[in-house]
Amino acid sequence: MLSDFLKDYLPIILFLIIALGLSVGFIVVNYIFSPKNPDPEKLSAYECGFEPFEDSRMEFDVRFYLVAILFIIFDLEIVFLFPWAISLGKIGLFGFFSMMIFLFILTIGFIYEWKKGALDWE
Image (cartoon, rainbow, N blue to C red; front, side, top):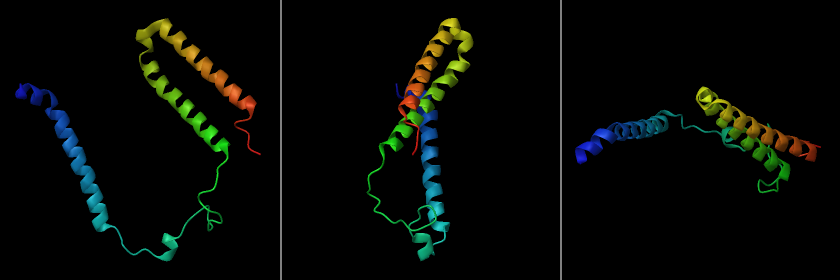
């Protein structure tokens, strides 16, 4: 029972141990060998080349969030396109038309957002 478990999962366990060891090792080496002489210029707040002039807890315009959501939506679209493109030969016309419907719906949503002015900046 234990030998079957080790036979199946030992490479994964070894991979995780090596990855964890390398990650911790790189952090420790970086901490030991990094320069430790910060000056006031390096520690100062940086915002577009000049000192910040307002509180960092100010309200943001909702358009920032809309653009971020649109970016996530279209980024996820690309994530779905890669496996689809690889398996297109196996899934045939049904898979092709399913993806075309998916892309059509996303395009309609994009046009709707564009017409509503979510991408316009004053």
